[in-house]
Length: 324
Image 1 (cartoon, rainbow, N blue to C red):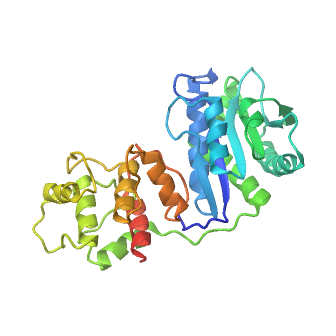
Image 2: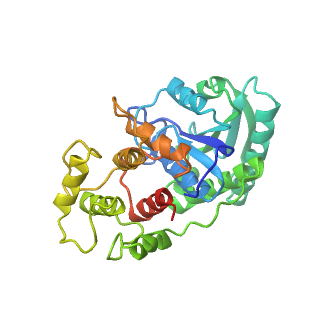
Image 3: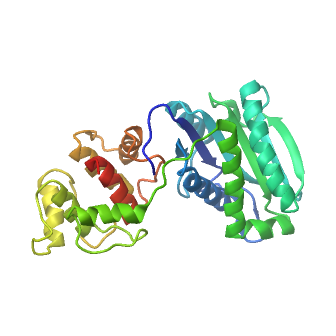
């Protein structure tokens, strides 16, 4: 969550498959779910480093192979990592770069592969080697790219480990170590979301405590935003529906919201950008609004516009906007 500048590396994580394409399956597992889970865990770990992180998908949606590469190309990404789980009855780990990939892609893959191979060897799995292939996401990306195959979903020993969320966290950690080494990533300042919430309380923007992972509801969100812009105070009688209406009357939102419903990231980003005078006009593109926050160093990882905001994130980004 630490602030970023325009010199930071951009890494795009590509959870393979998704939506109507489940990928491989075995022992009750679906590849698309495992890929997304590992990618999300890796993104969370990368948030502790000075790097910008994007996902080609952050939910169970259909994303074409061409779209994935085009997305990374449009960002001018420095690296593209496609995350997969293998099938076919084998075992172990392997990595791929494009058939005609250059020296940079090969060198970066070698570093990443070394860290992953060491991790898997320690877990009792074989290194199937560093390979080349003409996969679409490797062929059509403009930047160095790599595709990793993490064990075999249809082999019993492999699937048992893949089904363990703590093991998937370890996979993400091994990938993290490889990326940190390959790109010499520097740690960001330590993020303390509880402290960020405390700043809101000290500033008189909230009067009660909120848990870091607690979801932000529209009534409280509107009240804090209105207090920030001088339209409300903590001493006012509590009227969450009225606070939401103030946002609508002042053109910060354009649709009705129940004050007890959760705030999605797309709308959060839009309201903040409108406050900053930077929001897009028609058509509304919540994904683009999130990208604007990222470009301005207010966040350092992408978010699904439909995913819900929590208090740690809300407080942190709002404090950055306030300069607190």
